[in-house]
Length: 220
Image 1 (cartoon, rainbow, N blue to C red):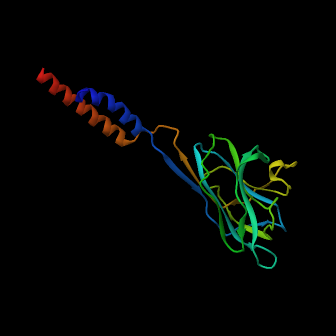
Image 2: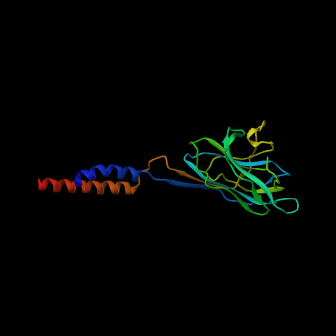
Image 3: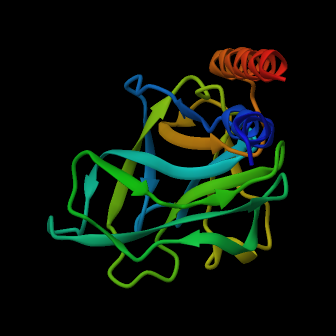
């Protein structure tokens, strides 16, 4: 295979690979001093934040505690983290993600769900939630950090007292005042996005092909 033919074969593959750009997006809101409470043995069994998927892959989701007690005598209690589909009024099982029990001993804490790799279709609704339902040695109570904005990820702060949050017989409650403070990281690797480098590579490739063609013509 001569140089001219090799370039013609390789160039489309180079351009195709360069056209696919993995775009990372982080959605978050800020803690504005409002506390949401109470989640735990002396409060609601489940607190969550609904969100409408922007499409792509959900990598990480974090919810933030402001204050609380792990146990009534300041020991360590536990809470679970889950992500599930949302039907507009309540969570729908099975869960897409369920954590091992997470220890909590009070004060501020970031409850993190990492390495999720969940492909979430565009505009579908989901809920990220903390729960003491079914948890041994549940936290006594946690007050979550609240925010007055949704971090550009449409949703609401919701809560439930159901024994099983994925099989609630009643709609979850909706807080119309605050959102839960959160951070959510998505990557969208399904849509080809032309980058400036793509066009530069295309022009360079065309130049090489033209130069090789001229040399071939002169030598003929």
